Image (cartoon, rainbow, N blue to C red; front, side, top):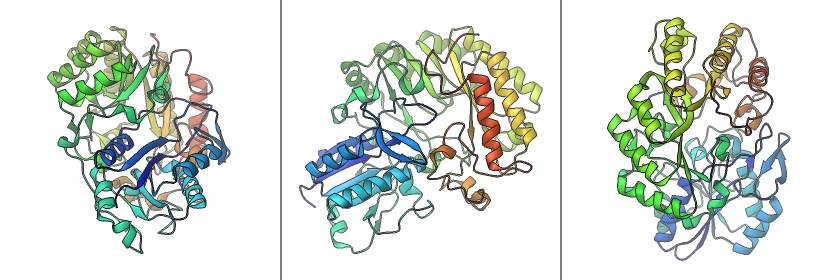
Length: 464
């Protein structure tokens, strides 16, 4: 292909539990657009789920969608007339919106080539309702931003009569170059209460590293990104200068379990962040088993204001299967009390989450998770105690083992209400409780502990 016009697009996103929120900067789609432009393609990124205009009129499962209206999407695609529409569909519950966008594009221009990337491309063939061939011309797998460029340069997409599925391209450290933030409108990704966090000024999300060294069988991060690998310090600082020049005041750090890194590495990263930003939020998770006074003092000295505290489960038999770090509930709760005190003594606030709805789960186990979250909020000062139901993400070992146990009639991969925080249902039936019953227990407990909706305001982190 030559000078074809390419639109990299992200679908509209659902509004759940009254939450509009601000979705994070789409670094993957932004990097792909940057790679295309650097290789001579006329490429533009449209994030149809992050615009700050009125809600879209389309609904799926009676859930309104946030972002660009369908009519406006039609106008944009009609004016741009792209040769290629490359859709980054990151989450399985966005699939209906992805199909909606494909239908719009083909209605306007049947000749437009449709390419799918993101997590759904990795799960190709496993997602319920994913059309085989038809309106999709190519599936680009993996996280290497060069994969799409290589496909387009080969011109195979114009020659092949069948859908193309690329080999899985992996990202290496050398590809972590500074981001071109001019590709996006930063105003769509910044502001107070950024991504449901209590940021006080304009904030943006960032990742120091990609991938994860933990081997949780239910998590897609190791499947998609492999082992943890980091950006070079000069790249990070260049990004920070660009963000700062665009008015960003605070940083929401999404690295999975940042305390997995050495104390010296975390010190270097956070001190550099503190040089440019007035507040830091560790949204990727602070693993309690590794949090100590040295890390807590470092957080305080670098202006960390809050974050997500990654607690485990009070169910010791399940904990031993997941991590095996504690021998009794009593020992674990004593550890949590000590950990939360480290944070509160330094005015660092946090929220927590419990996962429920494992295959064969019981009412007793779910109630123990509910009691645990209530204890975390009432006795340990968690600003926000949340629940999520276990998801069998395609591509993970957990999915491979449990995909035949999904509750009958549960199309979770396209049902936003079942997918998201405190949804209408779990994915698996329990031993003595249905998937619907799990959802009812969790949702009722969430509202009893936190109140209805998401606590966007007032500040969801507060001192006990």
